[in-house]
Image (cartoon, rainbow, N blue to C red; front, side):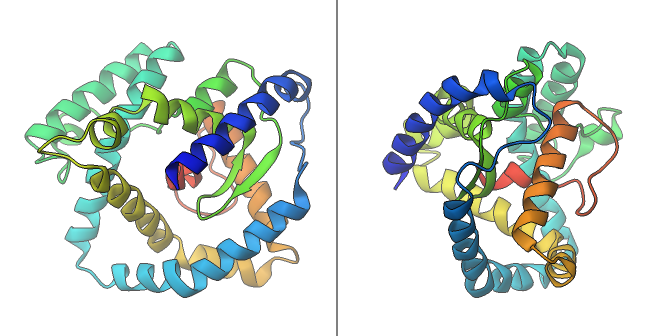
Length: 253
């Protein structure tokens, strides 16, 4: 499955290199594969109804400290991707802040379950990824995509995911690429699955309301995703129309 995903992403790199420059100056992202995207979206929605939403509802019933600790630990892991992207974007202040957060929360905070770094004045900052770094470099989004299970993306963000899987994500490197006696490949996929469930649980009401009030739910999700990505690339403080500060690309992701 993962090998197939890598092949698909590799093919997308070709399109990325061809179309990125032509789309970089356009305000609207092209939905080049809309028919396929809509079919994939329908598949994802069906999967959500029979699997992810019920699991998210069960997850919501867990005690709040468990859910908070889980979110904290997942956020701590995300620093392994955020820090190199802070550096690539030239934001050394954020890189320093996130590095200290990673060290303090991994040790004193017990692998990130607790957040003592925040109490010490090192606050949680916006997550960064390679797709955002490409955007900050002025590279266009390419075409809009809907990936099976993963959800909304663009060619640029999909290529960013490939970079993570090719050495840019230390957690992926330690688990999937170099199994040790401490971490295994399954640890990586469990963490990503938990991240998706955590995201879904945080946004149950938002998604339900959005689906009920949208004339075209597919178009609404597409618009919100692209708004959210643009905001993050430009480091804007204003949030998108709905949802909390969770990441749409937490599912790559």
